[in-house]
Image 1 (cartoon, protein in one colour):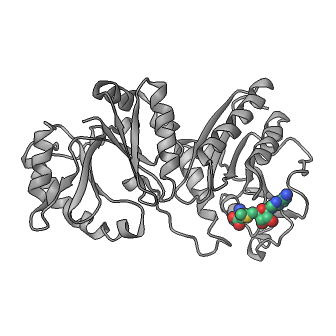
Image 2 (cartoon, rainbow, N blue to C red):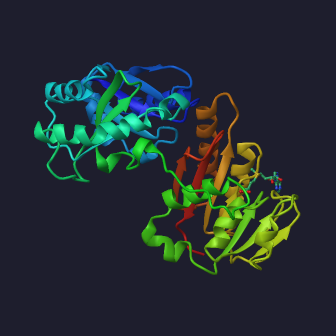
Image 3 (spheres, rainbow, N blue to C red):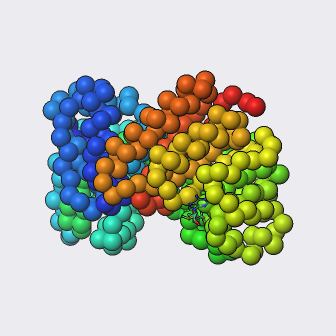
Length: 359
Ligand code: SAM
């Protein structure tokens, strides 16, 4: 098979397609995308099977921004008989000569229609796992390091079947990080920063890089969903915004609130570790200001959002990041950069940068 199936947020199919075309071309893999707006997935069909398989193995999945999950299709779209879906799925895996797979994930698009398939996906998983084990397609015990079999349900009667490699995929079901909203948080935005911290900072580093007592600055902080995440980790936060901060946060004694322009605010000392920024502004302007913070050594790590216009979102992100990185490189900064369209993001992407040159 010479097709990849890519998952994304519904409404971002064009960005997902632009991203796969861009990355595959760098590997001399050419093809075209099949997509329908608001379906939450894209099929990329390459002209050549061998080069596609190499690209799928070698291209770094973590580099993708809009693509939440990817799989190499192993069969044409399956037609499933609601009376016996299992047989058709097992037969397809046998025709594709699959064996030694580590686990099965029954998934579905992140759309309202897709969500109605979650019960079916759950119901299918156990019997499917048993049948695939019997057929020798799945290993007898779940194996996290072996390839993953994905069944992507489009409806009760149709599904795609594909594989992904655990060292180069999203380990999350449907490529989605589900988090529980903390009732004490002042806004749902809090989940964006929580997801970003979990995704970008390895758990083993939390003691060092998300440590109690660290100083943080939150630009565009009101009402305080992001500040809440930092306060929860016992940090001291300077919140910058003209709007009001939630009283519950001010009462902790860990927050200082200044009603000043986030583009003009400068820290008094070079002792801030984290800069976070969720200001609704042009992405170019935000990225420039963040670069100033890094170059001036005003913070060591930063997480910020780039709000995206409705059109040319992929191109905008690429252009903004290129200028941002050029500015940092010119200043001799060495850094680690990660960019993702997180599950809790909407018309925006989240950027993480860690300055590797210690102050
Ligand atoms: N992260 C916040 C939370 O979790 O509650 C939500 C932030 S909201 C999306 C954007 C905020 O940016 C608004 O409160 C707005 O007042 C603020 N903002 C926009 N431009 C600003 C500027 N130039 N300086 C300071 N704040 C700004």
